[in-house]
Image 1 (tube, rainbow, N blue to C red):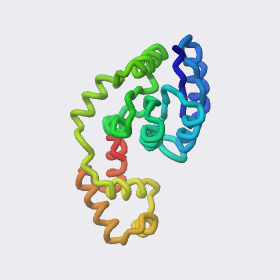
Image 2: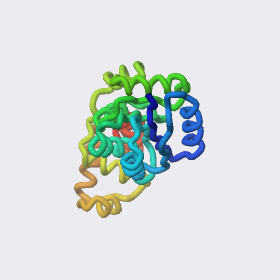
Image 3: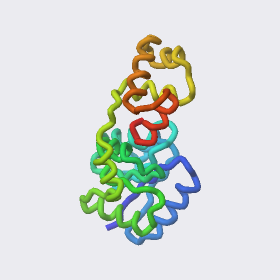
Image 4: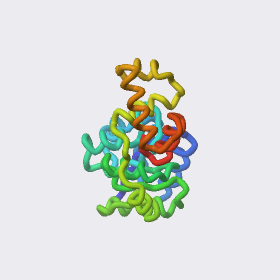
Length: 202
């Protein structure tokens, strides 16, 4: 049986290299490659892959959001998140989004091919060390709105700019920032963004 693959990664060199490596496997066929998260679902619906390998950080829509839409619109397609960022929070969010595999990009080509075959057999594939770290880290303490405000603060936007972007009052934005800073045990909002990002909470 040939396993049909879709690859999504915003870095063309990585996307091309992965495609070439996976195409060497006798039982694999790369049927589509895309460089943006908002192209994933359209390509999947057009090409009907068995497995979609999705990067997390892509323009248009991140890989975790794309995985959630894909799980809803094409549930027979198994999603494997393939990322540079082996963070505990990302793993938890990936599984919540419907992914059945989470593989970091420094894995060997043989291990990646094995992961694809295992998810096709109905298994979940997650690096054991990352799984243990996820259990130890626990759930994100941030509310949805605190996460939104921290994401908006990434670029160094002022409280007024964040408020305008999210249609909130400036006082409400300050309250959410204060809550996020407290929950991440940070000294300021810049540090709160970094800590939350490192833990995969954003």
